[in-house]
Length: 254
Image (cartoon, rainbow, N blue to C red; front, side, top):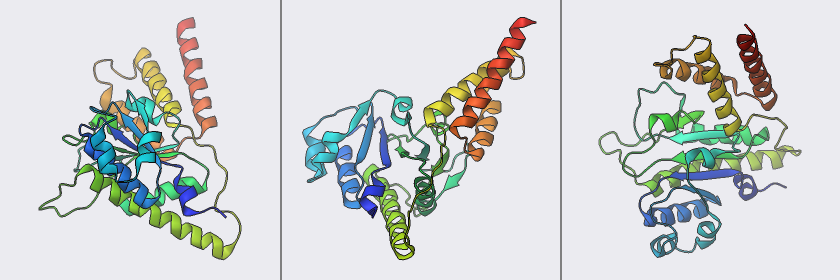
């Protein structure tokens, strides 16, 4: 039987440029409370740190196993689904989930075998930039009290991890009742493969004059939204990049 803990091992919590080591420790504690274990830190200001260990309050193994990388792109490489946490409403027209919907979406991908799934949390002071959020397929927002909506980093992680745990435990119970497997097979493209496709697409569209070199942002943002809705599979990305390569060769031969 696949337990909820085992299922949650496919969920990755990513902290982008955390500034305070105590927050890292508190996040590790929140993760262990809910049965998550995979933590990635992007350019932490102060880590490892005794403050992080002290705030972890027994979740030391999560800190010890944490992966430290120097860029968000490195953190999301290999992930099949990336969800970015946004603390405030944005002009960025991106699909928005609440924490329960976020958990349901993560579970859906797990059931299809499209893992690992990553949830990205931004800097304590400013969150994630628009360009960083564009690397995510969905955004998740915690609908806190609008008169006092400020949540610290660990509290935000705790809310999301709680919803993830509840969704996965509910799926486990349903699977046990019905019998059989909780999982099917699929092959979504990884986040880094999709990112390379977007880079290739922008390069080709610019070279043929479809996208102006001075103003590629709005067009590419719309195209990313379009392809994100499709949930591109690995084979589909290969086909699309093959088409782009053919366009490049044809343009050069003229």
